[in-house]
Image 1 (cartoon, rainbow, N blue to C red):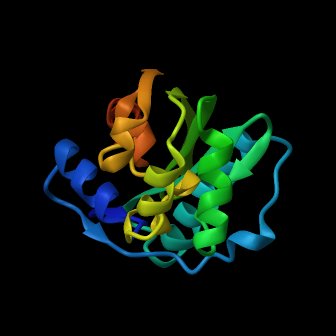
Image 2: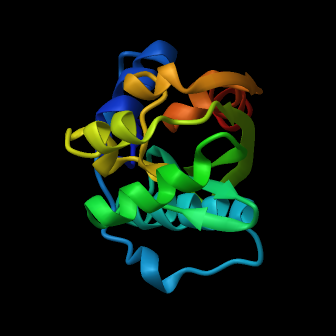
Amino acid sequence: MALILASGSPRRRELMSLITPDYTVITSDVDETKIAADSPAHLAKALATAKARAVAEENPDDVVCGFDTVVECEGEVFGKPKDEADAVRMLRALSGREHRVHTGVCICRGRRAAATVETTVVHFSPIAEDDLCAYVRTPEPYDKAGAYAIQGHAALWCAGIEGCYYNIMGLPVHRTAQLLRELT
């Protein structure tokens, strides 16, 4: 039995290494545009479940961990920005406001599965327009939900958080370790 991380994210690989160094990476080919849910939190959970189950189907004897992160601001879902204009739109919406980061976690082992969603509240200070424009010209915002990396330059805008810091990076370490213990 192997442990598989169903994600190509370098941040998730780094965070999974805090739980165990003994895992492999197999990404799923799930079409995320075909998955819908009644809330941003449920969307994150549904996406994580779809990714984990897709990889688990091909690896039925292994434990598969799937994740997905979305940012929610006043009910609007912010995934990864499509381009610079989309990143600017998202960051302007988050500037000076509170938002939620939802990470869906799904762990599959054979026919058994456990899924949950972790939510962290993030408080951003107002972002100066010149800082925002400079940031979107870097590579940092483009493979991250909400167009920012809390562990990067966006740390300068973060006035506080309520909940799991690692959740904002896309893998709630404590909750994932708990689910793994329950399922293995």
